[in-house]
Length: 499
Length: 98
Image (cartoon, rainbow over all chains, first blue to last red; front, side, top):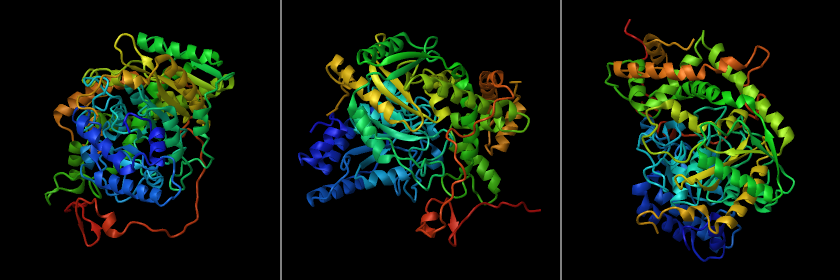
């Protein structure tokens, strides 16, 4: 069994007893051992827990029990979701060594489905960033070119998939943290409709934007994982009490005849790399060949989405991160018996938070302070209304919207780390989706001719219509696979020591 | 509108309970100028007739039955505490001497 196979193929091999879940987990640990010193996708491996889970699945299978489709398939979990007893750091010194006393709902669902959680993946601190360079534990490297970023904030999850360290991964997406990493690593990632996947146990960054979602190497695998983690959760008051759309059937359908696909005029042009635009246009041409109808739509307020996002997200983060006060869990600095709680708090937050997190807390504190609230936070919330209206109008004319996922391919590590605004521009095409709470998918659509690096194709669907992303994604993926003759990841250079 | 002084940044850091060195304050003040200059454009677009959106998918108050369910034991709840005593979180002094 090759670790380069898809999760659905691994699932079939497990069902046919060609391989055991324990063997499959061990093969992936061998790959991690071989390549992760270069990639650094993982912050922590939970070998004992994973092998115990795998053994349990093997036992159930031997006993003839009915198992979920992903039982025994390994997964990499972004370190922003709590897993009982397993270190959860959010890429921050603030939580170094912390072992949560409970499971996130996503983790409970994965465990119930028999998924084998190999370990926790690297990320920008508290999910703030687009390159994974903001991790307190050092950057993750893009398996396509180790000198480049794997995207962020979920760069550990995307790199683990692209380096064949795991066939499935969980990410979280506040402004593009699932989709942009998928885009720059040639993998697939989905931000479900807001409220589609429980946020219980997801360490909050910006509560009205955060959404956990599935990542994999194929659209069908992503759908299988989506189905496993989605659904109403009474523990999350923003969870949607609504049936999960049949994303797996949609991924398998591969029929877009007559579907109206809208191209967003504003998500192109200035700032978009030539090769990104070319690959995007070629993918659109494939959809036309498959019988889809192309509609150009205008969303004039998207122009303000980035500015509004960088007020709303920091505002919510300044409030959410107040919980890291050194009193009940996490880091405590300077408690020498003489200092007050407030002094200890101030010192702990100075040492525990990195630069980007501090920047956003200060920005949010400013935007929410009296005298500035209406001008900044209030105006940003109004822009959010306008963006929603743009989407509503666009979805009257078409079934899905498409755009490049990110304006460029993977940039070099260090290239933008000293320029926050340049870094923020990475999220220009992904942010509108979060602002409106709708679903967004990124899947690979080719290699840019300038640098031979992966380009992502974004599909956006109305709230609760997540199946439409899988319908279009599945059809496009099949057409591109035909054209390329092999999966895009097969064009990536082989990592030293890779199995 | 987008001007922000070093003193203001220092005050924000105090409000946010983050100790900052002189160096950090210098650096952050400069960055805040640039970032605020870029995000201030949200003020250009929406008029008084536009209502704000705080939440993408409308939700009303969500209630559930109040039933007793298993919860954390005291030792589990305290497992991540920097310090604890007598089944409680132990914190530095919160009131001054006076």
